[in-house]
Each structure stands twice: as structure tokens, then as C-alpha cells.
Image (tube, rainbow, N blue to C red):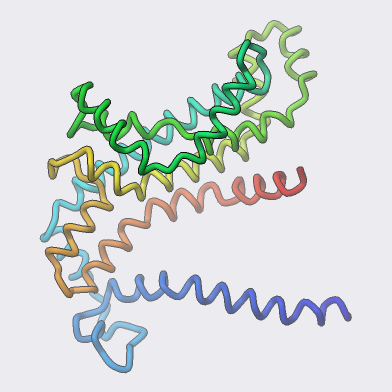
Length: 272
């Protein structure tokens, strides 16, 4: 009983913190259905006077929203697939294979996390420009498929898998890649899922690099499109909220699908 009483203040603090974090999202959802008068009403009105979809229609009238949406889905999914795939191969090589310079490569990957992104933007742009990939999907995707964080995250799960499992698989006739597919990946599902979730979220909200490498409306992604929507809609905040709500839907869907795996990976990491 005493321990439960001690947890009451902590529970109250956590509930208050949760409400503070959820408040902006709830306000955004409600504002997406409000009229101009509801948005600027004082005192503020929580619920809209009349629920309507005019704000969502206005988004499509002001900017080619579907085009931006398709660009974001294509680039984010492609980047996530390639990034996670490369990170899995790198993590497998650095944890279960032996080759000269392995420690140097691992240290190099770790040290790259301390290099600010701003430092690499200009050299990366020059390389992409020389390759003729400016204003193309390849220019958006290729520079973003390498991630030290994703690789190290997957390494932290691969390293816990006993080598005896690999030895047993090799005795049964599995080769190097079959061991990866049949042993390593199935035993690291939660970690790979978490890496995929973080990767997708990072690429979905990417703004700086797509803005630099593209100058065509046909190639703009949602974060850039929202900036142009702000210019078009001026002070129509309800329209901006409608566009933002549609933008976060894919992230919510992906998170709801992989929520259990994410919690499981955090639990396993905590235990380790």
C-alpha cells in the first residue's frame, strides 16, 4: 500500500506530461474541421461549430497535394527499404564475419554519427550534380540510404545472437546469406522493425535535402509542399491544419502496425 501511495504523485506528473504532449495533436485534428470564425474565436472554441470537409478540399485546390503525397510515399518507402537492407548487410558483416580492417570500419561508422549533416550537404550536392541526378528521384533517394544509426541499432541486436546458432545452420548446409535470412533476421525482428520505423519517419519528414536537390513541382515532397501551402493559404490556419493532418496519417498507420514490435525492442534493449 505504501509503495502504491508513493507512485500516485509520479502517476499524476506523467498524466499531466502526456496531456501536454497530446494537446497540440488534438488541437490540430479539431482545427482541421473548423471554419475561419472558429479558429479566430475568443475565447478559443474546442469543437467546430459545424463539421465539414471544406478545408481538405481547399488544400487540393491550392497545391497539387496528391502529387506531393505520391512523391513522399515513393521516396520514403524506397529510402527506408534500401537503408534498412544495407544496414542489415553491414551489421551482419561486422558482427558475424571476420575480415581485415573490421574494427576500423566499425569505428568509422560510429565516428560518422558525430559529423553534422550541414558539413556534408555541399560535397554531396556537387557529387549528385556531377552524376546528373539533380532534380531527379535518384538525387533525392541515393544520398539518404546510408545511416550509421540504423546500422548500429541493428548491430546491437545481431551481437546478442549466439554464434552456435550460425554454426548449427552451417552444419545443416546453410551458406552465408542463408544464415542471414534464416537465422539472423528472424531472431532480430523487433530490432529491424524499430530501425524501419525510425528510418521511415526520418525520410517522411525530410525537408532540407529534397528542397536543395529539386526545383520542379513534380518532384516536391510533402514537407516542401506544406511550405508552399503556407504561402498560398496565408492566414487560413484551418487549411494548414487539414493538410498537416493528412500528412501525419501515414506515420500513424505505420506506428500502429509496428507498435508492439517497437515496445518489444525497447524492452529487450533495456534488459541487455
